Image (cartoon, rainbow, N blue to C red; front, side, top):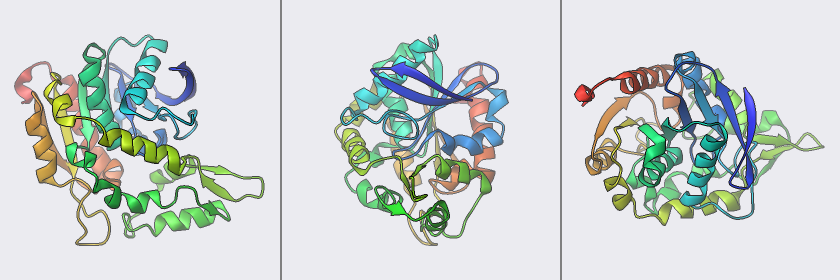
Length: 287
């Protein structure tokens, strides 16, 4: 399942899950890695489809150059991977940052994209206040923990999980860390590269990009609290629907969970059902 490919002057790591056509390429969130989608695989996305889940540059096992974290850099990495694998056209499916990257690629490389699945992403994520919303998930970056068990306990106590736990998510956090010679652990993603990627998304004219996307897009939204009961979601239904209205062929679908938990358990099952219906629809009656 683990593979590496040379693309855009870096080594990009990806997971390959065998299955049918069309091929689906999964792009993870700002600090996430390819294993964040393990819940979708468990829910049956593969073997229904051939699925490639990527580590974007600076995340997971992909190279982490000192510079090059604009949306254009990330998009060139993905297109280079498609070229290396001789994939002329794919379904792009991205979560959070990966959802915005999917839309960016569709706007700039339209011939390489068949359809787009956006999971909990919209232009509201490109507002400066998003930095404050996602701070709890960024606090782990750069820290050194005595051992894997300490790191895992910190994750389980995170406010955005609020007591929720699904065993499938553990592989995502295992892929998130490197083990040092003294058995201490720290995240593979560095604060500086993630900050650069965040600034890259803030720099883009998203209204213009969305207007140029001519593909069919389904935006899947989860509005569970990103924290204890009463906390706001990362992307509200209103903000998600605002993005849908800016697309030429967009549809909105609500699923269970919050920004993270939607990718596991019941939320994952619902997402797989939506994706399956979306990419196998033979006419525009889907809309």
